[in-house]
Image (cartoon, rainbow, N blue to C red; front, side, top):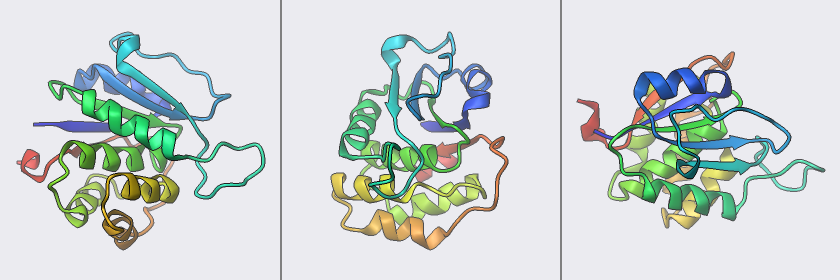
Length: 176
């Protein structure tokens, strides 16, 4: 069973240890400092500097772009799936759920986008995947607009305090 642990920054060490994660993707503003949990080797940690914005051209903020999404796809492809993949951003609500969907589809491309989006919503009532990451991921993964439509269909998540990590099964059969 392959799972992705989605977490806020404040709980990455706890989640890495609890779920025995050995691979981690960090989606964090470039000025944000944090410590990589000791159980994650430096060569199994991908850090992507970006802000949580859904459109380009917002002053000094760094919008997600194709290089970020391609890096998520490539890193997910190198994940051995023996232990969960930990993905985090500041609050675990927008960038990291989007990256989790992209990673899951890159690993298991034969699955239905709507089913994956519904699994995300069932796992987290708070997740509101970053629309720009989803749009770029949809394009790079050749999903023909289906990923973006599926995420739009689940709607905005409930307001969150950034303290609600969750597990997303990569494939539907991993749920049971």
